[in-house]
Length: 462
Image (cartoon, rainbow, N blue to C red; front, side, top):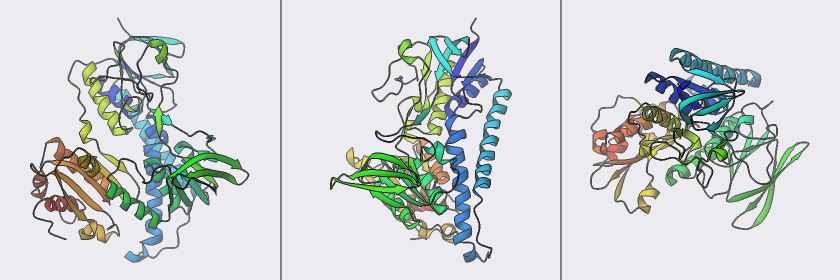
């Protein structure tokens, strides 16, 4: 008999969720993890620590700019960087230990070490080889860099190094205007760092609704972040005072350079599959290095599955979690499914940016007849009360059926508000369904209802 029914390789959001769900379904499960703590990139050097620093620096911004407006007269706050990093580390520890507790509660065996797959049904960890009926590869991703850019995690850093800088830099260049670059850039901008973002494309946050992206860039600019768009970085040269970033302005074909204490390379991520032995095993890969899978997450090797950042799709922790749940169901002989049309994405700056479904640009490209309902947070009493009235809710619905096709929000608590629309889309709801649903007053969520009303006869408060 096999040692396990399922061995999951990787204990990030996809892997640990898969392991726990499979155990709940009655399978004997092990999860392989080489880090000293569970939770993968997300909990250790990604989502969770970055959100801790985003929260801390947002609180700093409130104290510096808004406390006095509310009659809260306090001395100018001082940043204790070591204490802030300790708070971040405590946040990580609490969450990773929570996963350990859940493993014990659900009788998931933690195999500590790095895994390889010598053959179908076998997983080697260290000097031991374990037999299993099924294998799920959930090894996540790692940062990518650029030719001519050597990362040392001291001066030229990825998001990992940006979470553990020895001090708050005076200047920082962020290469890449995607989610990671803007979130970490926002953290340091609030701490007083002069942040310059260099982006190859002409707009920030590729794939985002263009109207939201334009507003987002304008708001971040007002917060002090500088942007150099349409610029191709060719090299980064370290010096005694930091680093020099050389780039070419693509439209003018002119070379420029900028100096900074710290350079954050945020040019994307790639699947992390090193050491698994995929070549020897014969696993088929996609052209960009992701593991090729079918609709049931199965690879071309019987009994071997893959999920999360290791396969095609948005590199989002919650996408990996959904796939982890689904593949656990598949392995247990049930039906696992992920609705990729209703996976939200969130940027945790201030204001937050969130979206789900299709953008206007996508609808235009496919020739879909649609209507737009917009509502500004300037018309939302709660948002105005907390000085976060910049931004709006934009709801897209089918012109004929009124079915909700997408939603894009920039404003307070956007990352929470978007899920009302996610649930509505899962049930195939119309904009009118949202408009006719009573929303508590005063809440930010009223802006979502008003946007839905704007798809019909018009909003009330604008």
